[in-house]
Image (cartoon, rainbow, N blue to C red; front, top):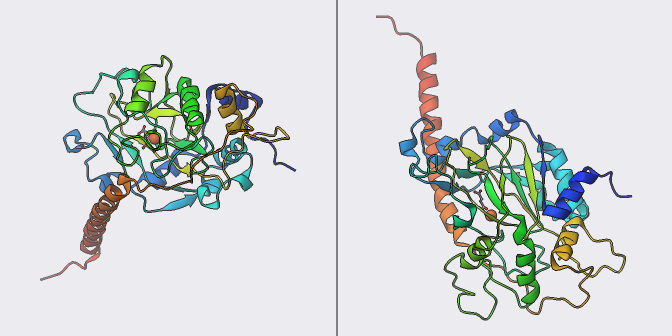
Length: 328
Ligand SMILES: O=C(O)CCC(=O)C(=O)O
Ligand SMILES: [Fe+2]
């Protein structure tokens, strides 16, 4: 028996039509703060002095992980439902991490939000594998909000209108494309330089949605959702993560019983097909080592040093307070 649906009929329809759905209040502000409490020490910035905010955006490494089914049970149940049940998802996908993606914006951009078409960070997630239409490595894109995000406050910009264009590219390239969508065999497949394919798709679109909301909201996005970091023109700290959901098996677009998962249904709709009996990858699945990992390893060393320094300062001040008063 399949478990009871956690998504309402309207939420399911919204996902099928737009490729995303927002689960409101999936965890509390207190829970968020219990995870983000040391973020400023980790960043090495002063929350009250913007001149110390020397990076617009930071994709941080992780120190801790926690069980999403306890932390945000409704979001976790919705993830399972969109992917066709818990048994379709790898066990490690249950764990969310404190690998924060912090958007602080820039002094020049304060009060001046950019047009979505002018953003230059458009991409589809999955910098660690060669992409095929049925790739299991990225089954869904998940975005929990760890701070309130107002419009123009640095919410991830998403482009539901691009899903058919992204799906067609993958359908037309069964030989696989690089993480930046260069087809295998073309120059730059191995040595990629920029996000030009994605950025030009975004420039051809008119409809964009900002993933704004309240602390504890969780956005669930189709894995082929084109998205970009946006300008945080308000400069209130914006913290999210993108916990990956990977599948045990590739997506299946040829189910004789027609029992497609909701994510598979979105892909098929985007291609204007009921099924894809003849489509299959024509080259092996392959992993890619992203540059991001090297950057994050160095960042983690720096974060650990700052956390250690803070601990020592706190210990020293506790000792001072509890030291006996010396009488002369
Ligand atoms: O910072 C954001 O809003 C988006 C980040 C993102 O898409 C990524 O790191 O892959
Ligand atoms: Fe992303």
